[in-house]
Amino acid sequence: MKTCSTPGCKNLAAYRTRSKPAYCLECIDRIMDKAGLVRLEPFSGPRDWMLTRCKKCGIEAHYRFEYILHKQEIGEPVCRACYWKHWYRDSWTKYSVGQGVNGEIPESVLLDVIDACGYVLLDMIPGDRRGEELYRVRCCSCGRISVERLGDIVWGCTCSKTTRQQRELCWKKLDKYVSPEWGNQCSI
Ligand SMILES: [Zn+2]
Ligand SMILES: [Zn+2]
Ligand SMILES: [Zn+2]
Image 1 (cartoon, rainbow, N blue to C red):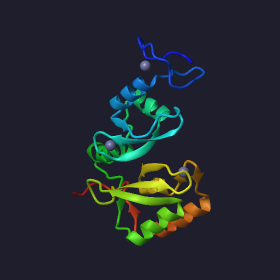
Image 2: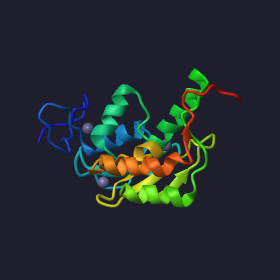
Image 3: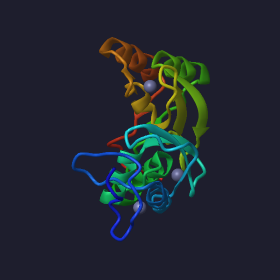
């Protein structure tokens, strides 16, 4: 085992890597803390999904330590609930347009689409405006919990992507209720 990649840290790294930095458990938790996350599960490897809680919004979701490191490097919030909320807000302040969906989707249609894409809905996270909702879902195949926009759900989990046919069917179901607000000038 190598020693931890943090300068000055003498602990053994908690995992092996060929060329990338590797950290000890103490430093892993310190890095996660800096990224705004609390680890809720034992660390088993940099590419394993780990259940975490966001210190800012309290949302619990799985992330890989590799992903956390990457987002830290580029200065982006790791928590996808915080990230997408910021992204929706940013669009209004920068471009005066929304990125949310325009229209109300009946719950039965929503649940049907989520189910067809291999997920179970855990929570709906309201946005600043209607149409900017985020969905906390669990993948039925791998059990991963993630925060998604409606448009991302349709693509399915990384472990079992939906087919093109499945996606088209979902969009057809949603199309009746949703028209993208993208491109419309803000009229508020
Ligand atoms: Zn260390
Ligand atoms: Zn958050
Ligand atoms: Zn999955």
